[in-house]
Amino acid sequence: MTGTENAAELVRHAPGAHEDGAALLPGGTTTSTQDFLRGVWEENPVLVQMLGLCPALAVTNTVANSLAMGLATFFVLTGSSLLVSTFKNLIPKEVRIASFILIIATFVTIADMTLAAVVPDIHKALGAFIALIVVNCMILGRQEAFASKRPIGRALLDAVGTGFGFIIAMVMMGSIRELLGNGSLLGYSVFGPSFEPWIIMILPPGGFLTLGIILLAFGWGRGRKAAEVPRVRRWPHGVASRRAA
Amino acid sequence: MSSDLFWILISAMLVNNFTLHLFLGLCPFMGVSAKIATALRMGAANIFVLTITSLVASFLNAYVLPFAPYLRLISFIVVIASLVQIVEMTIKKVSPTLFRELGIYLPLITTNCAILGLAIFQTNRGYGFLEGLAFALGAGLGLTLALVLMASIRERAELADIPALAKGMGLVLIIAGSLSLAFMGFAGLSTP
Image 1 (cartoon, each protein chain N blue to C red):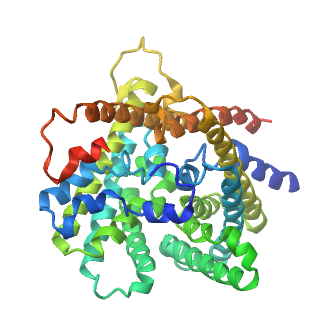
Image 2 (cartoon, rainbow over the protein chains, first blue to last red):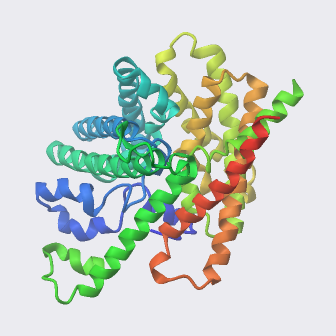
């Protein structure tokens, strides 16, 4: 989904209408394990689909912040998917996006108030970005592409998987940035006092650079795997062939 | 007073650039920054919607939200989304040329975090009507600047001899990181 100059193309790609969906869902039949696992790794929202980048770059300067943001987003995504899937037959098609956003905004308000009451320090550090979960395209994308068309159980599994994938990506970014930028993990010093922290990693450019380097590393790994494809036993559902392509 | 307004504009445009410093509006920044011409149009559409949003947020903050502060988020998003829809329909009716130029970008912008971010930051900082307008204009110009810079670099990168491994989003993010690094130089402006 790189290099989409055409905005219409962008609309088709961005809100979860990813090209992989068709390959993995032949006639809409997948097992529940696949519903769950797809979002965790194979179609990780941040690292593969490049959705929900704003929070992934903005608040990942410490592990604690990343984890809090990941959990809040997980809660909003699961709650919204559950509700959208429950009411999918009552929501008119014409106003479905507006209805989804209303449902999401309600859950975000709950998450915002809960965080403010339970962990006020982290709530202050995350600032406006909690409210901005509403416009996280990953959440709206899952509602539009999955929850509004599937039974409750599968929508829930898909939301839990995607939310879990988001937490993994957030904690990955947060660990790298806090470790290099501050020499610590979750506030505990790792390298000792003689370590000269790379301040840049906890500043805004560090977010771009960290994600950029992670993506380059993933691309490198995929390139190596693709070169090996003929020798590897092909997965069912054409995963290996898709990687090669 | 007027120097305050000017400072708000410069601060939103350069020092706290929405895209490169606050990470707002990354979707268009990554998605429609391949060509300079499209980037400029996207920027123009952004400035337009940001200004309207600022007006609406000022109005809501002054007259509606004092009575129901817990409805802040929901009322912002609903009002902004419906207003952009109305503006889109009006432009389509009044000036089809302008609609062709901006049309496809307007609905995309509604779910852009920069718009909601502007409304929330404006509220948190307690900006009034005029300050809000200056803030919105600065933010819009900053977004346009970042988009055009990015598009210019990407147009050059098309012609450059880049290893196949580095092509794609990884490279775009690292370019963005360098741009963000360069924009950090503007932080010196904040202590005049």
